[in-house]
Amino acid sequence: MVDVERFIGEAIRRIRDDSGREKVVMALSGGVDSSVCAALAARAIGDALVPIYVDTGLMRKGETDLIRSLFPDIDLRIIDAGDEFFEALKGVTDPEEKRKAIGERFIRIFEREAKRTGATMLLQGTIYPDRVESEGGIKSHHNVGGMPLDVEFSGIIEPLADLYKDEVREVAGGLGLPAELQHRMPFPGPGLAVRILGEVTREKVAIVREANAIVEECLVEEFRPWQCFAALLGLGTGMKGDARLHGWIVAVRAVDSRDGMTADPLLLPHETLTRMASRITSEIPEVARVVYDVTPKPPATIEYE
Ligand code: XMP
Image: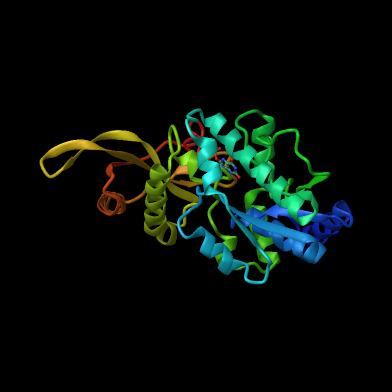
């Protein structure tokens, strides 16, 4: 466990020292990691912080409005970059390629915005498990291993690099961030793209976004999972009236975990599962089948790609 007050004091000092008198650009995603970073940096360097929210087109339902409402006092730049991301993902089916494509777009957009604002430094909410998994070569987290080397910032600041997720949540509390944000489930940097097997298209994202929203509505309040979501596995056969036709197979995942390095599936009541399946198939006509994932991590990962 981290000594919250001490951590906050030291992090603020370090951000101030590391940034010098430069402008610092950061991505605010609405997750607890980037929000804690923003709150620390706002205290450390005030207006020299340039927070940017990149709407990748791969975000959860209502995300942009939520971010706006969570940070009413921060001068947030909202970049509508969906077209760029979908273009970069066209024809990409390999999971690592997808992550790389998204990571690269992210960085390019930052470089572009940083140039516009005169920012020369980059602030990132990388936490300890991101580093471990990336250094171990398990996968390229978009905020670490996926970053191209020709990045044009003069420095990168990662104030949370030694913290686990639960420690970041404690710091969020210490900073007085809203409880809603403090206890928000983790959401992967590459967004809904890693919840779609195969090529990412607007149509698939729209379906998986709706399914994610239903899963959250059915599970978050009642069961408080560490993380829960829906993923799109592929097409299967279903029925509409008397006709057999193709529809999407949606997997629901709900896990408990400490830090995301290992995870156990929740033992959900049968009625909850059937209610959720019935909502997903009736509210999203393109879905023909819903399955519940009972695999722990390891051997599975939490996300599907
Ligand atoms: P996996 O799928 O590796 O996920 O078992 C472990 C935790 O990390 C989240 N995750 C990510 N977070 N960038 C992130 O910031 C990423 O690229 C990324 N990939 C997975 C995942 O949601 C889970 O909480």
